[in-house]
Image 1 (cartoon, rainbow, N blue to C red):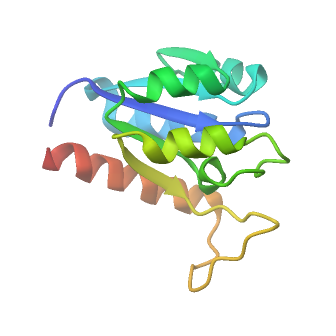
Image 2: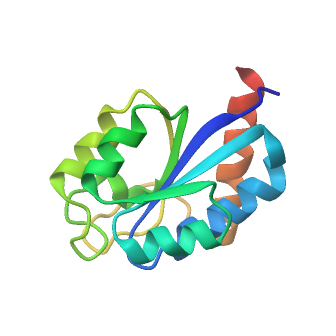
Length: 142
């Protein structure tokens, strides 16, 4: 397994989903990863750092700069949809995430204004386990 893969966890609102992702990634991949919390707001960043991220930064510019140096980006689907997360995701953030050269693993979490067809409606805990498994497979394959 490649050591020190740089993973950015991006989340907004209170960062609760990001916290769960960080805890599960750390439990599963231990010392082979370095997690950076990228919060759309300071509360999300703070909570994700408390959950075990190595470092954290907040806002659109921090996301712009930091995603350039990451190997993997993870977060909810909303980070690529302008206006998602109660309007916190700006068009700039959505574009930055999609333009990053990093591999992206996004959780298909419901968005009130977007309906995804042919996607299983599963509990968030199940989705996070699947996300962590895919990240592990990706790291082992590189």
